[in-house]
Image (cartoon, rainbow over all chains, first blue to last red; front, side, top):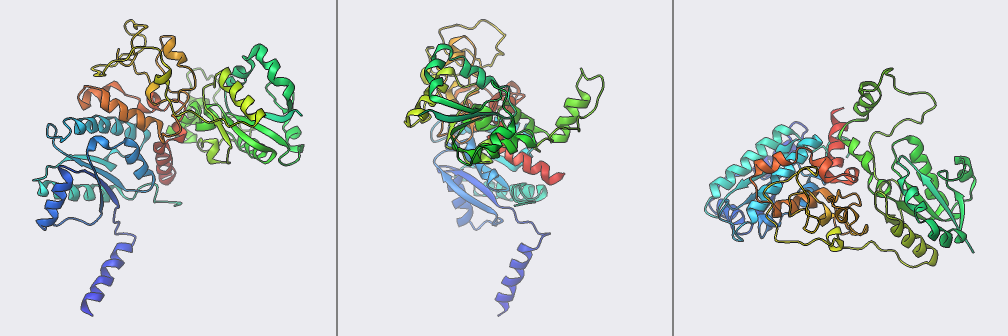
Amino acid sequence: MKSSTKMKSTTKSKTSKEQFEPRILALCCNWCSYAGADLAGTSRLQMPPNVRIIRVNCTGRIDPTFILDALYQGADGVLISGCHPGDCHYTTGNLKMRARFALLQNLLEEAGVDPRRIHLQWASAAEGDVFADGIRGMVERIKKLGPSPMRRGGK
Amino acid sequence: MPKRVAFAQLSSCWGCDQSLVDLHLRLLEVLPQLEIKYWPAVVDYKLSDLERLPKGSLHVGFVEGSCRTQEDVHLLEVMREKSQVLVAWGSCSCYGGVQGLANQWSIDEAITRKFLKADTVTDPRVPDENVPGFTDHIVPNPDIVPFELIIPGCPPTSDNIYDAVVALLTGKPFDLPDRTVCDECPREREEKHIKEFHRTYEGHIDPNKCLLDQGYLCLGFATIGLCGAQCPSANSPCKGCFGPPPSIKDHGAKIIAALGAITDMSPEELKSMFPDPIGSFYFTDYAASFISKIATAERSDTK
């Protein structure tokens, strides 16, 4: 009985207007960050539950179309997490993502969309804590920015 | 029996008509098979001539240009109603065109800049009598009404138009190819490690080597191969005016993806090379891009 009332109160706070709970897409590379996320989970590190992870083989596989499409479909933010530069399983995939990310930031800025909605971080398979910190930072950032323009207003 | 056709011009430069007329003597092969019902670029038709036609009475309707004014939207809707097959003719009609770049600003900002603040304006006023009024932002025509066929290009080449018209007259399919300008380009290509980009007026362009290898931003790799690589063949980089091949969802995003893979620069250097990514990567299709739609939503929200 007690636990059910508790549940009720948390769902209520989620739906109330003041408490904005962002929906964030995280794209993690198979070899470092996805394993890092696994480690964060098995180490029972606390993370906000706002992030949905999609595993890709390498951040070099991430087409900027994925990121823009996610924002268009109403994701409040997109986090990309890969191996540290120099550690890529495929040698240079993460460096390609880094270059694409730089241009993408330029593009968002020029278009008038806050470039902080997208974020690139490096977290190795041993850095569960770095991954969890990254998630916490991202959720905090997006909470300050507010919901995606695609979810506000008419939609 | 000749096919009944109409050519409608929305906001555009009418360059697609020029390209059609550039068929010269080949026009004589096509024209006898067409019964022209509406073509203001060539004959003095009025909008009422088009509106009087019965519903679905046109075999093929060609729509050129994008909807910058309310009248354009009306004309587009009338064309849809009258045509059995509606063709988006040229990049403006398919993707919003160069006018789509104005989606970076609100319509009020654009009007102020154009009519009140332009350097050459001596008597600043916004025209408001006997004009149809602007649309808030450019939406690609296929997002307003459904189309049966698109022929991209700024303008489509005379050959593209000829092929499409012949296909429509004979009832054959006209599919856009999934190849790029690079597939049609005669230049020699190498493994790419670009260390620096140049403006087109800087240095001397080797006429035989790939423009991208020489550090000129040529967008042939992400642009549909319909034009026969006209610009690279004339020593000028591709600007991407034909838009992407059909399998690509977002032209600029694909350009960014490719540039990330072929450049050998630090992120800061790369950023400084492209101070205007929208103008560089979305020359004629910004209105059709994800980022334009997100930015438009952002703006209408803060208004």
